Image (cartoon, rainbow, N blue to C red; front, side):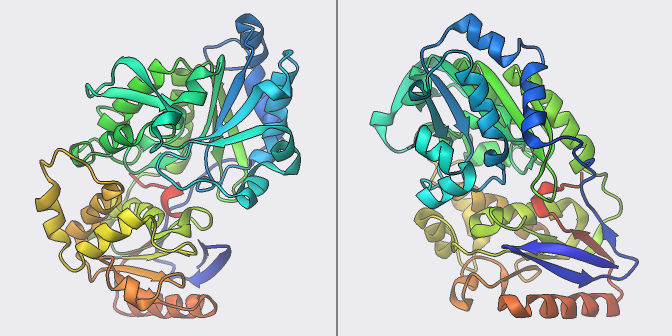
Length: 431
């Protein structure tokens, strides 16, 4: 049984035994083009007037459209011109429309990435801004507090716009249950302190903070409380398949449309878990998600419900941009070969270090299967780095990756181990 597993910009074809269980998404093929699909959702929104009517009612002088950064595989170039066309037709000039990239704590976008995401025409015609969570001058403090009782600071450009449109990819999320909707605002457009609180040790340690779950999830509650304060005018939720093609768009009221989109994703991307396996083989989603080890952790978490105690997870990732931020790398290196100490050091700690949350999620996997059984194969990190990031690392040249992974699979099969495969990594989350 041949299964395709993405890594960076390539696809590996691995032959698995017929007894292996393969978990994939079940999205239907799109019947319409992305622009047509988006326009239909704008004109038939959930619990909202159509976008044009909302704009005509509000009569704004300025409009902001919030988009995700390069880590989310959203084909903006295929549909954003249609959204912008709807806004322009409401008598709002291009000079009063700007695109705001909700970077959260991620790095700023490059010009090359913007051209890739939006196309030349949009980049030349519209103002594009990166959110800067660590720049006080770029932030504004809102009245009141969030769900957790903390002050809220959001992007100044976002809050000063007369009409706010948010967009986002809805997929299973290993902390917040599902991405999309409110996450464009929090953590996408928050201050560093708000982002840190959103990813605090206690939030992530909560049993409800897991893939595919919104009920009693503190991250969902926190993000939702902050998004409500932002008074978002319209929300566009996008769902993509494993070919990175839009299969569904659900627009309208920020909460109602997101809820409907989450229900669709739950139905098609969260297959029911069957028996636990001795070995789970997963990708980290391919490019752009697997560009850093930071993001690759999501693929490991997606495999966690399927693997037996002390079983094996074999994950692959491109890591073309290395490990991740300097702060994240420092945390990983500080706890090399002593990841258990991380939990003892951070449990109950009031302050949150930037990017500590990703290592905290990785320790959930380590507690279940141990470091030797968390195998990570990549061409993007050298052996020196792999020895310091709490995995059983394998540096394999890309051209040899397929051959080497096939040897491992053959060996597991020869030992009689039960095998499960999640080719799409974090985009498919068995529950």
